[in-house]
Image (cartoon, rainbow, N blue to C red; front, side):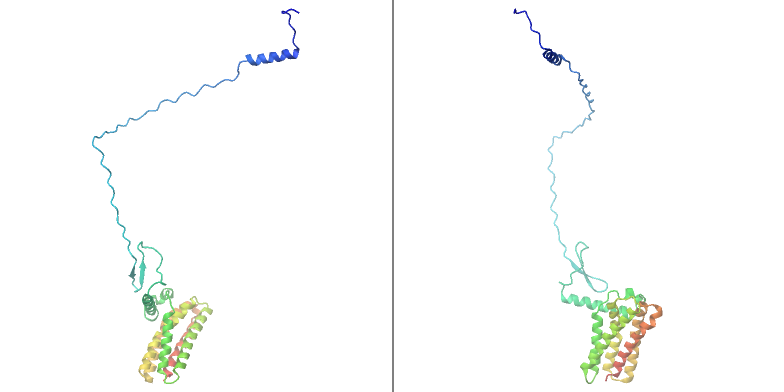
Length: 271
C-alpha cells in the first residue's frame, strides 16, 4: 500500500469529527448590552472660609453649679393640721407611723374640734351632711361617752361603778341600734359615720351633766337638761333626717330623741 492511499472512516466517526469542527468554528450568538452612560457632573457651591491669623481662644469651662437639697418642712393648714410637703412639690402623703406621738395627738385633737364645730354649732354645712362630717372619727364620740359616764358616776353617792357601766352600755348600744335602724330604713349613711355623729351630739348633754354635778338643785337640773336635750336633738336632726326618705323621717328621728331623753332622765335622777 503506498503513502498516498487513504482509508475511509466509519460514517459514525466522520459525523463526530464534523460536530467537533462545528463547535470549534461556531460564532457566539449572545449579544452584550452597551454600558449605562456616565452621570453628568453635579454643580458645586464654592464656600469661602475666612482664614484667621489670630489663634482661636479656648472655650470657657462652665463653672460647677452647687446643688442644695431643701429638706421637707411641715406646713400648717387653715384647720391647724400640719402637712409635710416634699421639696419637689409632689410626693406621697406623710408617714404617720414614724411621726412623733405629740404630732399625732395634736392632729387628732384638731380633727375632734373641727368635727365638733361642724356637728354641734351652727355653720353653713349643716344642711349638707356629705360636707359636714366627711372626715369622721371615733375618738371624739368615745371621749364624750366615757366623759358622760364618769360624770354620772361622780354624781352618784353609791354604786359609782354600776352607774358608769349602765351609762356606758346605754350610750354605746344605743348608738349602734340607732345606726342599724337608719340603715334598715334605707338610709344612705356609713355605719361608723353615723356612730361618730351620734357621739358628737352628746356634747351638750356632757355639759349639762357637768353643770348638774357642780350644782345640786332639782330646778336647775331640769332647766339645764331641757336646754341641753333640745341642743342635742337640734344637732342630730339635719343629719338623720337627710339620710332617710322623707316619708320615713319620723321613724328615724323618734329613737334618737328617745335615747337623748333617757340620758337626760339619768342626769336628773342620779343623786
